[in-house]
Image (tube, rainbow, N blue to C red; front, side, top):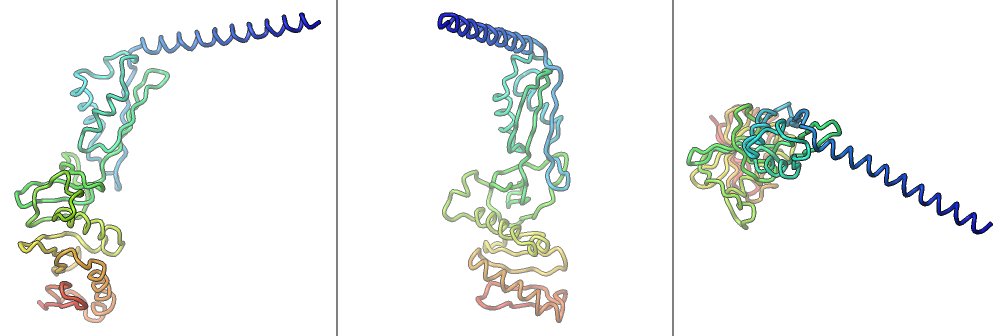
Amino acid sequence: MAGNYQTESMLRRIAWIGGAMVILMIITAAISRKKAMPVAATVVKVKPLEGGTLLIDSADVIKIINRSLGDALDDQLAGDVDADRVERFLEEDPFVKNAEVALTANSRVIIEVEQREPILRVRDKQGSQYYLDKTGTRVPLSKHFAARTLVATGNIQPHTPEFLKKKKNEMKDLFELTQFILDDDLWRALIEQIYVNNHKEFVLVPKVGDQAILLGKLENIEDKFRRLRVFYEKAASYEGWQKYKTIDLRYRRQVVCGRK
């Protein structure tokens, strides 16, 4: 009896192993056939920014790939597509924050692209124009669309990639001021432009009215904006701020207004 049981158990084990090998062979053959097939299609999905903005479109993505590989993906065999390599090429583009490339079962190449999100458009003192994204990365202007962002002009030094690593840097101050404004609903809705004057002081230009808000250096920034908020909520509600030419926040505990 014991011998019969052991024999049956061994037969079952052999059958199980044989079945697993057959399945493995089928899968291997399917994978081999898939790799030998030409790419059926290349599908590009670019995630739009807020408002549907596309700084880079699907045609641009295809051009980057063709230029980098020297050939179109649609002209290659599925087995020759190196997804990691394509992702690296795409992520080297200044408009691309992240790229994901996958090959489907029917030999279609699916490419998903996440754009960099500009938060500031800069025109420096040399006339160069570009965006800064949320990480401080320089992004060129797009041929497709102008992103709706804060604008910075005036005596702005040329961009250097390592500016955020420096302990004190004028571009770093500009970037931190931009973040401060965008983090507050009121200031994000109110402020349109940041101007850097010849004294390296910040002047804010609101979307409504033609006043200049003299912010000065990036010092005591929370207190300066607190005073500005109080001014708008109280003083301006009585007299209106349209009569003022300047709103000066550079002096401690004061809001000094210059009339037109």
